[in-house]
Length: 297
Ligand code: C5P
Image 1: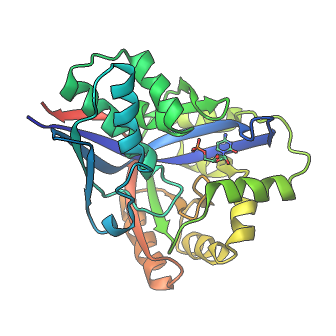
Image 2: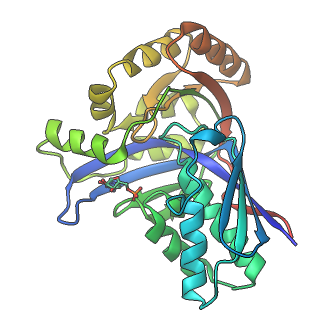
């Protein structure tokens, strides 16, 4: 028997970052929106924990115990006093570049798949707790939709979304280290104020108003990501020149996200971004998308 779980990527429509805390993390007001690019994680009984991965970017995915899918299986098994005897296969469609929570998606997907396969019957609260242990963005991958993340981003309040938003993602070559981006943020933002969600942005989400959302998109990590990767400015410029309503660095980057008005505009902005030579590829998607979902049992 196998269990397959489908799990979405995300974009941060607002990422407000406060000063570094004593534990090294930063308090955030992080508005997550799940988008329709998905990985699928399939859990099958096996003699020991094993990870495989397929898809165009599979070669860039670690298959050892550093993969969040492996850590999710180990954490769930340890809590329930069993051995993580499972083969986890990741069918990867989320770009492996950073900023779209692809690794977090695989952690949340593996957790839900193992829970179903092993019949551990973990409560939603326990699953969210394990997700938070895996990483700041992992709880949102489980929940999906739209949510405000506070604390280090792991404490979620679900948000209403009143329409469909259309996106183009420009996938950069290579990654950007998340800790390095936060360190650069600390260096260039010595007096960061306490983070707060923007009422205008929450309103735009609630009413499904893409133009208003475009005006409210904000990422406090963007100057730090641009400082470490100045070439992202040319990608942002290419997307907005091609007709996007607005563009921003997604999370800690280097993926850049462009909000567009409709599916036709998404296709033309994606084509222009690819033609500009300022990114590796471009993908279109819609939001919101559901969180981690069991497909087969
Ligand atoms: O929680 P996660 O493993 O995704 O965090 C990766 C790194 O990003 C952390 O080690 C830390 O350097 C940085 N981070 C942070 N503040 C947050 C979330 C992440 O400083 N709220």
